[in-house]
Image (tube, rainbow, N blue to C red; front, top):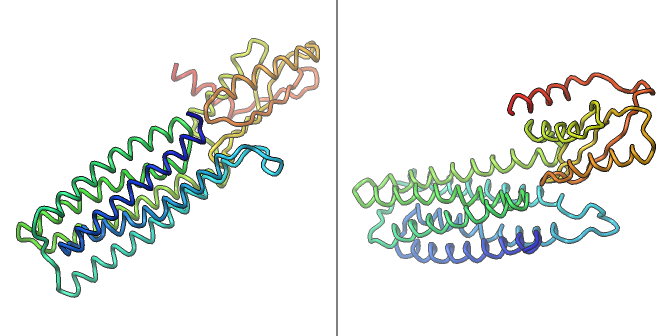
Length: 308
């Protein structure tokens, strides 16, 4: 399955699952009055709403390049992820407000029956399956939007478990555990929003990738037998993908054809890295005096040599 089809399939699966959970939790909430189940129902309803946006966003990001977007549309993905984060912040705030209001009002409802616990346990199991599925697809396709959905599903496992503890505690004679669990749910939701924002801001501001990846880029350039050194190595995010530019140092007696072959081989080697998109290589012949020390490149070489 190609990248576009895989990402769109994730959007559909997550949307259908969230709609089903929202409906089921809503029914149990109505019948039991459990605040913890209610907060989870609101969470799933919000998940369903943002799932629609994610599905639309994933459709746009997987469109092929065109005249106005020659590099494709993948750079939309961080914005989709930030929309998910915004929706998560709103939901977390609402759940926290409802939990605090319930405690202050002094009218905490004690949940009876087994249905609340059953729906929360089922929700946790469903979210675990969704989390593993989304994480696998995100890793295989380098998709920040799907990774954001995976993090949200991981968070939902924890919040559903917290809600389940609250319901069980309320039935055991500790009614305040129900709104307390809802409060835990709210903070879990808010933390996921922070996590998603933190991850995707780097994509938008053109941050450098990890030191491991930068070291691997330098190592691949230096692996070519005709490359004597590298300098001015720049790797940065452009959306979820990485653009690389660097200067390679070669002996000046190479013919133009030989220099072109060296450049092409280095580009191909670096572009084989899954997260790298475009690579730009400048060839510096020794006789022009453009070879120079580059402490950053040397540090990266020492880093990768130290790991071998």
